[in-house]
Length: 349
Image 1 (spheres, one colour):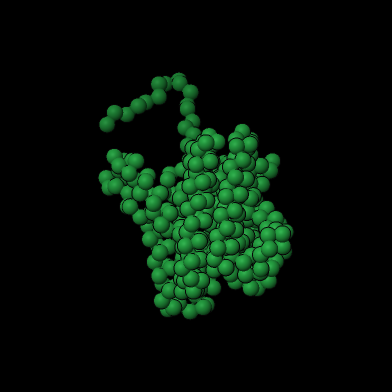
Image 2 (cartoon, helix red, strand yellow):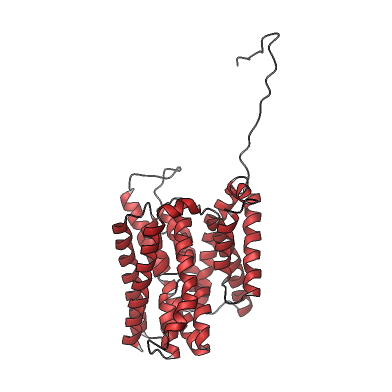
């Protein structure tokens, strides 16, 4: 092997090694963001933990004292949290699916929820394309509105290979609209002539995140809350087939692309299979209540950390450049999901 020698008299050159920051700093920041979101939820129960985590992530990315840290040494870990922790949280989300309880609502309600999800997804996707939103934002926003907010966006982004900025912008928009629903929908119950159970079904079919559903429906009492949660769980159950359909579509478009190991991507992503397995395990009744409670706590913590990571990727100046079109899509999607679910509830109650 040839050896390189420094000529005599030449000044010594110091070699500087710049190592890529590891993930632990960012993962610790994501855990801190999840803890802060939990504390905010404890102090203000009307603010869901996951919503607080997203907002804190966005704030951290823009505060003068923190943005350098968030965009620098913490970025690898925050990006990892937004991907990997999201997958684990979605698997645990399957343990919250009481399929037996969902089916008690009857096939008419099942059909109503499926129709609302389909109308919202395809209507939002079409409108987003017409408005010219960049990248995968129409797909991600359509998913978030039709299924379960930021969690669904994270799941679909994993199989679509979406850009992190598209994911972050979509999460920010869906979180904003879902948060507004907490204040707006209870004001509409009386003018729309909805009984408490019917209001609960409307909320469960139209509000995005599970925490936002709980915060909205509880204003009409325990009867409305119970109906809302069951209908919402029915929407969450549709996450797996939707993600599988997106994965199949992406695989068909990129059939020639192989993984580094020379294998094609699995038709159903591993975390979606885990979600279905967790739901099946819950349906057996084999898990004690204590284990389900622990799983729910872990799921909330993981999703909060993941959403803090996604929120920290939001760049408001970039978001502002498509702000008008994104706001128009958010408003249009909100009208579609609220209108379709309202008609569906009137037909089934």
